[in-house]
Amino acid sequence: MCLAVPMRITAIDGYTATCEAGGVLRDANLFMMQGEDLAVGDIVLIHVGYAIKKVSEEEARLSWETFGTLLHPDA
Image (cartoon, rainbow, N blue to C red; front, side):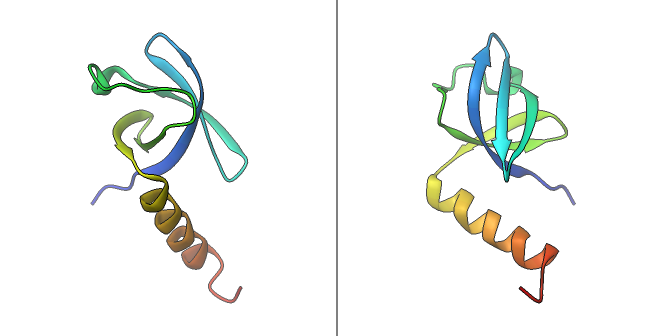
């Protein structure tokens, strides 16, 4: 089983993107997404430090809500 977290790209420098989700910033490698048209503001799935797929705002929102429920089931 693998887990990928949707994160919004806040900056791109070559094959490295700074991404944010829930106030957490991480650098992610874009090498696996060569040929994909990526820009600041796009949301990508991050798995072990690599961006692996571009996702829609709706897909990301549903994932973030699910993670929130898992982490805070009583909220």
